[in-house]
Every structure is written in C-alpha cells, then in structure tokens.
Image (cartoon, rainbow, N blue to C red):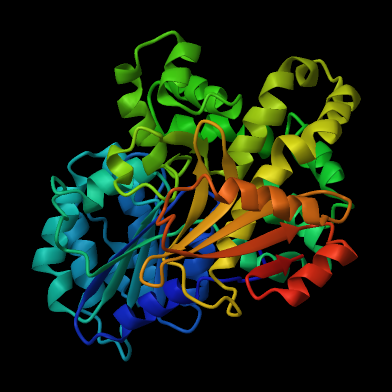
Length: 459
C-alpha cells in the first residue's frame, strides 16, 4: 500500500532501539495483513538494512537463501562463493564487516524457521549470545502466526526468553486514522467501510475505489476467487488445529449466543470444554469477554458476555457464512439483497457503538477525564455508553443512534430513565449525558443541549 498511516508509537519504539549503541533484539508480531511488512519497510528506508523473508521450505533452503541475501548485503566474496552448513558462520561474517552505521537485520516470518526445525530458536539463541550481542547490530524477528511467535520468542519456555530488548504486537489501525485512507468519503461511508474492513490495511486497500460499501462487498467478498471469501478459514487454519470447534464458537457468538452457557448449549457441549478455545480466540484478538463497565471485579463477574472484536470476522459470520450455499451456487444478487436489508441493523450499528465509545476519550470539552468507558447492561436495561470518573464521582450515560433521521429529545428522556437503574454511587454522583447520532439531531434537542451543561451532542 502506498500510504503509511498511524504507527507513530511503533516507529518511535524501533527508532529508539536503533539509536542504542549496543545490540538490540526486537520482536514484531501480529495477524496477517495488519501491516507488519509495511511498518518494517518504512523503518528501514534510510538505514543499512537486510530484509529476509523466511519460507516453509527446508531449513537448508532457507539458510542458503539467507546466505545469498547476506552476500549481497555485505559484498563479502566468502559469503558469495562458500557454502555454509551452519547459521553461525553466516552471522559471524555479517557482523565482522566494518560498518559505518549500525546494520539492521530483519527476519520476516521467523516462525517458519522454528516450524521447519523446532530447535531453531535454540540455534538463534546461541547466535545471539555468542555473536550478535557483542556487536552494535539491530535484529528484528517478525512473524504473523501469533501463537508460534509467542511460543518461539516470548514465552518463558522459549530459549530466546529474556533476550529481547523490545516487542511490538501490531494491531489494527483505529478508526480515528480511517479518514487518511478515504478522507473523501462522508462519516457514514467511512463507518460502513470500517464496519467491514476494520483497521486491516490490506482489507482497506481492497475496498479503495469501490463506489459504495455494497459494491465493495460484492466485488471483494462474494467473489469466490478473492482472498477475503475464505479469509476466516485461512486465519484460523494457521493458528489452531481444530478449526471446526473454533468456527462453531464464532458462529454462535455472531448469532447472538454471547453467554458462555448459551455458546455451550448452541454447540451441545459442556461450558468447561470451551474455556481453552475461548482463551485462544481472545489471545488472537478475535473475541473479547466484556462485562458491564460498573463491575468492580471484572474477572470474577458472572455477567460476562463474549463478543467478536474483529469486524471482518463478525461481518463474515453474520452476513456471509449463513449464505454460503447460495454464494457457491452463484446466486449473488439474492445474497446481496439480504445483505443490503440487514447491513445497518445487523452489523454497522453495532460497530458504530464501538466507534463512539473510542471517540469519547478524545472529547476535550467534557468536564473530566473518564478512566473507564464501556457499556452497561442488566436483566432489564442496556446502555450503549457508560463512562466513569471515580475521583470526581461523575458518570456519563450515552446512546449511539445509527439512523437516517435526526434524533429527537425522546431518546434523551429514555436514557435518563435507564440511568436511574444504574447503582454506581447512586446517592452521591454527578450525571452527564451524551448522544451520538449519524443522522443529526432535531432542533428541539439542540435547544435543550444549548441550555444544559450536562448534555453533549455528537454527530
């Protein structure tokens, strides 16, 4: 992708490591297509750098390819003309050069070396301890299989444990940067695209140039030859052994079975049998366990609900998976009609709530800083936004309306009634209210907001 968006913190971390006079070892990892290679390409632009992409071929073939890269990088004839059967010799010759600036060595898809040879993390640990750490060199080990990168480089049982000087887990780009990809679109159009592509740069790139969100869906997702059609299968196959059970969990959550007991009932299994799989999905940033923001002990709360946090995965399981039979038969027009009818209420409105909650922390006109922002629910009440400022004893209640028409004052009055059911410091608190509306606000509601200092409206 031509654009380089966000990633200021990650670039700053890498530059800080590069500026060290001593050796540095940085682990960069994250799911596929999230922009790791783009980040590294941006970072290495003005540096003496060698980039090597490991493959799933044999260790010998990877070593030979690495040696070829090293020969071109150093200009050393020994590397070009001699065949080495050990990695140590190649690294030793690289760092023995008289470098005018700190050399940067990047090994991308590092996990494949450990997959081909399970002992490779131990081999690299020996190379680091005996050769690299003694030289002012920067090494970046990058990988896209999260579970394998953690086990090979970060976990306590890894031979490389304790060697890293920094680590970066690259995640999706937040919505606040989305306008840099498609600033010519309206806010509604940006949210609709974000609801499908999330913050995955590769997905965003695929939708660039599409007339509207539905054109993009038909072109990029309903096309059985496109990568997005089978993307959920591909992502899970890379990370887990039993794809079927994980698919069933994601399907259950997408269908509204968000309690552990409901997921277990949907799958006709015991709740205790799902603990490990749910933990894995959480570690992969695909699922999140959420509790009402007012809960004092979230880990022990019995009100926990599971939600799919990857927006494309949620869209796929909500809109694509139930219609795969028709898609496989080429009945695309019928499927698109169903998606058009359900897209807003079944998906985009849900994502809009996440966008609003994320944006609330950036609202400087609010009278205090809210340390906790989330949702609230009990048996009878659901509130889209609840934010807490404990020291100020201030609570903010909000609703997010993804409607075509302007929101009127009745939404505020309903929110005030629901707020009464929230017990947090009920007898000693300051209450604030905010309304988010993609379709704007009525004149009556705007007049109310102008006359009150506890009501905030955001279009």
